[in-house]
Structure formats: structure tokens, C-alpha cells
Length: 288
Image 1: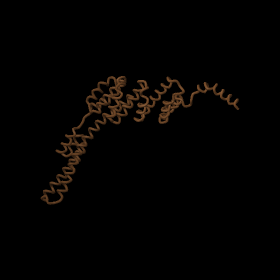
Image 2: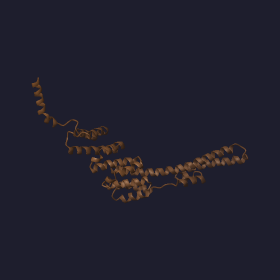
Image 3: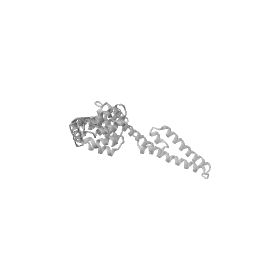
């Protein structure tokens, strides 16, 4: 029995180098190739899972090969997260792998993170993130640097400055064209003026914000009730219930119209600003 055990042990020891040279079915290279095939076939969710696995399996290949696979995995994951607007995924990459990445790949990760934070219109988080990558940002593409500056201008409502920068960049970066035009056509309505106009003339504030039909509707409704109030009041010597009902309706509609004009001006301004932000979203997408 002891002799048989020694034979088996000797055989195992002699074949250790052979087994050590065999590729593990779970090493980074195998998993990466499988993930790549899934990605190319359009199975992005499954590919994401396999790319993540390849990032943590480095035993069976040398360090150079592992670094290459790691960067390629991260690049493709960044593409997936960018397409899916997955901020959680891109921030997971940022947190766990950004220190060991080459500048090009790190820029892709940081760019995608900046795009997704901007898309949420989260000013505090955006400013904090850009400050945290300020050293690397100096080495990134000038178009990325310009995007961060313009994004900050938008958050601070410095529309004129953002438009000037975008127009100056057009000769080098064509993707800024729509945004530059949006800045040129950008206008805002004075909320106080819209409110005052409706105080003076029912519905006039809505006409000022570009909605003539709303002005006409408000003006005719309110003046009709005012007319009804005066007619029935004079006819009954203000002793009948009708002028008070008409007057109450007129006052209610009048107050509602004043508030509606205020909100209409706010909505107009919000829509103009939202259009600018969406135009810059397109610049981010076209620059990826």
C-alpha cells in the first residue's frame, strides 16, 4: 500500500509543471474573450457581468497581459455604462480602478462620469467631481476641458459666457454648433413684468410669454364676469345676489390669471434653460 502511494505521489510531482502550464477555464483571458463575444453579439447585460469577472482573475497570465485585459474590459464597460446612462456602474469603476489606468482609459471613465452627473443637473456633485479630477483634467483633451467650463457656466446661468466659448470653439469642434445656436436664440421673460401686465390687463402676461389664445380666453372670461357684475348690479341697484356671484367669479378668475401669468413666465424660462442643457447633453454624447 505504501509503495502504491509513493508511485502516485511521484507521478503527481513530476506532472505539476504540466498542469501549471494549462490555462484555467476561469482566468482573465478566457473570461475576457467570452465577455467580448457576448458584447459583440449584443448581449450587453451578460457581457457586463463577464467583464467584471475578468477584472479580478489575474493568476493564470502575466502582469502585462492582465493590465491589457483590464484596460480593455474597463473601456468596454465604460461604453456599456455610457449607453445605459448607468452612473452607479461608472462610479464603481472610478472608485476601484482609476488609479491604475492609463490616461486615455481614465479620461473615458471620467468623461462618462461627468456626462452622467451633468445629465442629472446635479450642480453640487458636478462641481465636486470636476474639482477632484482637476490635476488629470489638465492632461485630458481640450474639448473635455471646454465642456466642463461651459457646464459650470450653465449651472451658474452664465449663458452669455457659455455661448461665447461655444462659438469660439466651433472652428475646431463642430459638435458645439447646435449648442452655440441655442445660446444665441436663448431668451428669458421677465416674471415680474408678466405678473404686472396681467394685473393691468387680464391675460396680458400670458400674451407676453407667447400664448395669445390663453390671453384671449382669460381676457374674455374675466371681462364677461366683470360686465355681468356691473350690469346686474346697476339693474338691481346692488340689492340682488347676482352681481355678487358674478363679482366673486370675476375676482377668482382675475387672481388665478395673475398667478397663471407668473407661472407661464417661469415655465417659459425653464423650457429655454432646459433646451440649452439638452443641447449640451448632445455635445457630451457626440464627444464620447
